[in-house]
Length: 476
Ligand code: GLN
Image 1 (cartoon, rainbow, N blue to C red):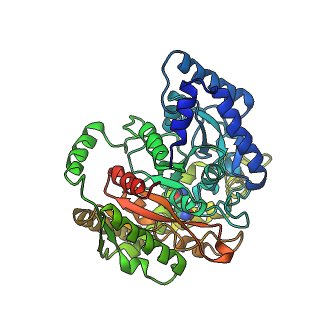
Image 2: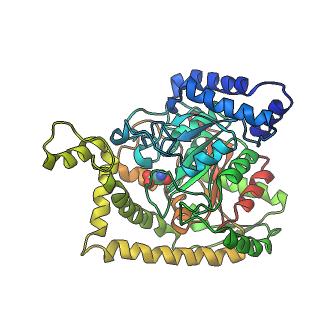
Image 3: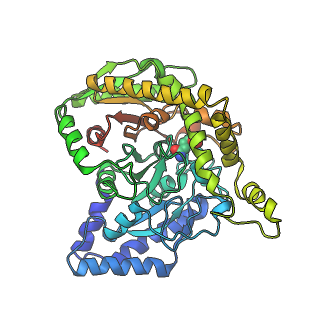
């Protein structure tokens, strides 16, 4: 599929249209479609958007444009945008204005992108449907009776409905890949540490990654190229020198094309048979493009879900401790000083963040630490080793992105049922490898006929390039 960014760029450079026209055209679509979809928590003021357009126009005048100059972008509401509300879709931060730009936001701005608004999400990125937002429910543009996935549901929906060419989301356990799959677009979760987390409101710090949504692979590559890189403000970003070395090693298998299929994992109960059939069909197609398919076994991969739902809870409880109405968040007026922190938390945080904070303190409490957190950390190491070994034999590991179709609103009201839907996406976060969800089919069932499903590909640490190759082979 052709790059929308390049199309915009050439129109601007050839003076076929102005930056202002491009932005207004997209804004019109975004605003009109959003009356039924609700992807945006806020479309920024005309004044703020004009300010950015002016900067982009100046870049054009001075011949300093990049591919992104003048391109409208939507960002998930957990990325700090200076002087703008950044709420993580939580009542706790309903009036919080960020005092600085996240590194990824700064990079978009430096490239001349126009950030037009902040998108809806599950509160503090906790969820897989965007139903946990404290403010509103986002609908799936492919079928408005269904969820768009989550937690970056707003960012995915905004791209899927044509409101912007690209957007940013964050992925702690699947929150970019799963909504991409649910809305029929592409979502990339980069390698942990490839993109700075500075200015991302933390959920699980050892798992969180910022990444792009788009409807074609070229645009994904362009955004990834701009947002990635070492950042002195995030010590977990990969050092340039280290990356050079890694790239040298990766180049040895540059032309190898082997896909590993963890068949037992995919054939387990609970995976929708339509999804499984489509998955195997997609993989079959890839043979035409020179991919060799190999059945593999990852012995511990089924444990990834339990590992995730221990480590993530633990990290959430620590990261959310700062939202107490004193350090961050609204303090409840009229409460006595002794009660103010407790009330601020109970009134400010929704059900899911509260549940996760409580479970997190439980798994970290003395007496339980070893049996939960300690074991999960050990299992994480096993899983890392397994992936390291498997990537000597294969270049990609493929699975469906989600075991189930987007559900109807309210259908998954048991939190555990929703956690189970993360089975295929969480392993990448546990071990830190990159993953992508590619739209690979429509459903041949009347009730589901507008829906799409995604195939997930995982690659070795810092080998995003291989993910792009397979997307290109599929004509995306
Ligand atoms: N659905 C997962 C969860 O609820 C993933 C969330 C995310 O990646 N932010 O934890």
